[in-house]
Image (tube, rainbow, N blue to C red; front, top):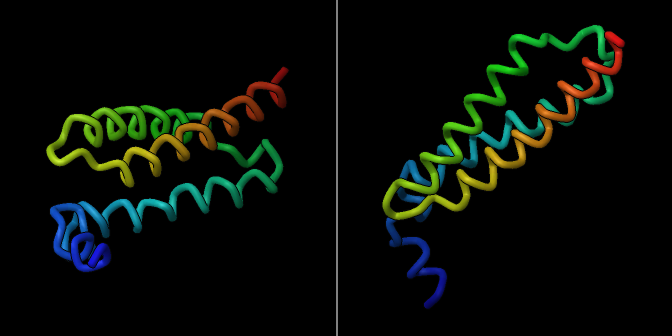
Length: 94
């Protein structure tokens, strides 16, 4: 019964409210993989752009109806990873 309700919900697997955030977890995975690379390989501009984008998309996920908690969690996680990458870059540049 609960599965059927989720399946047919406005944020269920039949919608882009579900599959968009699922695909966006790739950004988080890639960011986590990049933490193993040397900080000299980090692009400050791209990482800053990812931070801005995730910040904007977190607000969108909160404001859209119905609220998209999966998208919010995805971009909050990406924001944390990208801010960590920026801190690594700043430390490496002194």
